[in-house]
Image (cartoon, rainbow, N blue to C red):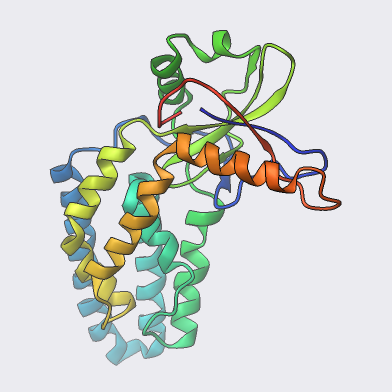
Length: 259
């Protein structure tokens, strides 16, 4: 469990996570490799056919046809990758800020729409998150903590965070990994080539395999919450007592990598 005691005067919003509205978007299953691959294939096919249609419409409508196609495509990518989580969503987050081989106004469309994957990632059902806590600790959240807020404070690509209070009265922010997300990440990395047709719409010269390997390198560390807690504690100790830098203290637990 990545439990962090909020530093006085510090924001409780973790870097890289997005504030959720408390309305869960789905359960804890992200599908098999085949299911996730099929979803990506459908999106790629839809994107390809939409591009061809926009070419025809451009003869009648001019640049407006291109603008509509790219806006619609960005919305489709946002909806699918946001619900898939894992490496798929991480790729969408990367596309929301990197330079793309597109005209500036089109690039801005993708950046603006896909930024929601960083700023408002859809959360997972409270029941699925509670099940992770119960599996890790052998008891439901209401027993592990004196108080547990089932509404997520924030959500991201591989997990979400909740406010809680320890039995000694210490308020903490707890980080829980989505159930099945580690397997989903591996499925996405194995399906890397299925991202290629979709990615070429954003950046025709993009080499998808090196990009997915970069995603792999980042996610391997991110999936290990115990290691992250060690990093967190090291930074707390380094900056404890600093006049203006505040780093939350990491609360040690005996839970596993995902909680």
